[in-house]
Image (cartoon, rainbow, N blue to C red):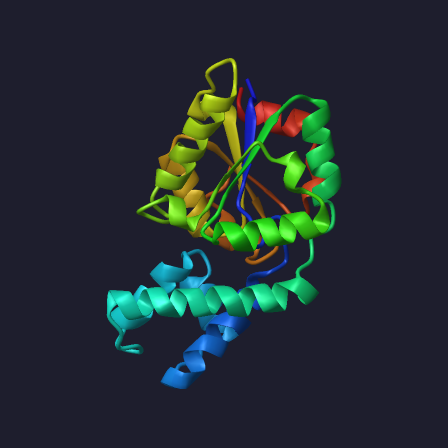
Length: 226
């Protein structure tokens, strides 16, 4: 039985992936590093900001220690917030989809590799914050996607807020990347992918793939949970 829908944020609720790339390149520019759109979507999009910076260090493109990476993380946060205040947009169909879930008393949550301040900034601007029971962000987990920690923590928080226990098999996760799908699968949850960032072939791990959230009916989600 369907009990909860858990959303990724960037690329699912808001069309902000390209804004993150711009913010990354802005703070990386003084170090002579620039990520192309192609490589960002191929190698880094599903990672948290800190894991992205760590990947650049492992690849010898960036030479910074952990303390310096934390400083760079804060700079990137400021850069993204400045861009998002004027350019952050909610993806078409999201609001109606959330209303449908609310009418059917389905719990909703966000599990994202973005920082909480970034998520809440865009949700508040779009007046969507009240739709979500729980938000789990990058700073709340030790291991980002594709590790399942984030989704398991989200479920734990949902259960602390509810009267009845929700099982992982009663959750549907909506993602836009293979990192997120792998994470949800590892957490024992059902998966839907939206082709906002990658084409359907690259999201074949999902149980169901759609172009837009408004294609989904409540019956589609219930069917995934048996």
